[in-house]
Image 1: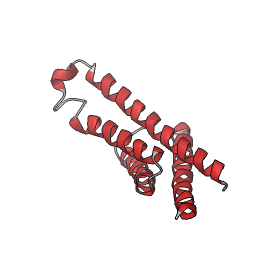
Image 2: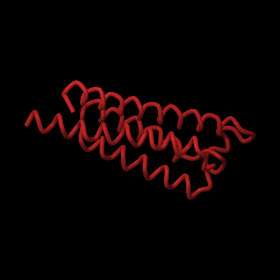
Image 3: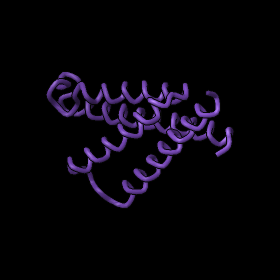
Length: 123
């Protein structure tokens, strides 16, 4: 992996994290716009965890853009944990979810590899 390829992999991982954050925010707003709306925020279809998920993902994305090894590994673990948790919570399991999961996992693995590679060259 060259330096340019590594920088691109880090950027891709950062943008993938932001895509996940925007998707989580979209689902949170959609859930809050249900029959209960925001008044049902603390016990309905939307919880504080939904908002925390968005904020955590954005914070990790910022760390990835700053080429943090810790943030890159944390995002990979956080994403894999989230997918496993979703599958056990009966989220529809079809071909598209498998392809998307493999794609995001690949981008996060490449981003983590790239952060370690660039840190190895600068130290």
